[in-house]
Length: 269
Image 1 (cartoon, rainbow, N blue to C red):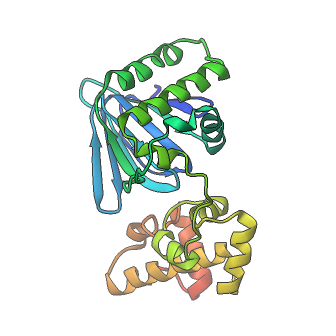
Image 2 (cartoon, rainbow, N blue to C red):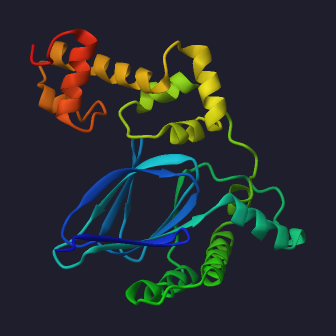
């Protein structure tokens, strides 16, 4: 029986969950607009929680990681559409608009998650996408591009402060690699993702990491996870089956093998 479905059209995609809830860490490399049709969406960033109900829409800034929990109800499946705005698309959009219409002296929004007020233009935009997901007719790239342009205009009409957010093409600031890894060692991230979140290309990340550690990033992560697991097992009386997922291992057998290789004895001890 089908329990979930995701359909992706050039960065605009529908997510459906029929009879199961799901929770995951979502990496927003690009600005993302999320509209909820049914069910319930909980977005967590550090200690802040944003709850999205059907008919509501939220904007998530690029280069942020959030935990998204998608819930179905007794009567409705979870169903939501996400629209991403890639940097190249925004550059092209910016090059075409009349710069005289750009408001002066506006401050960039500080929030990484911004709730969009309920407005007819937002509702109309996402309702117009439904037929493409409910049928076998695939929209052309031109159609998706027009819908994304409509999404940008919806944001700009919502708040002038979106201008400096959407059209900021400066490179992200580099952040301390070890600070980032110590905070996020338990997450399932590729080296490319870690590089991007610390404001670097993969090559620059590897070069910078070699300056602060004499082991590879992969080895550093495994060592860090095992050290935290060791502390939990020894000082918190936890069981291996209780800690291996918390520290970032995908399965128990891999955790046992890595632990024994590093410490010379089984985590059962």
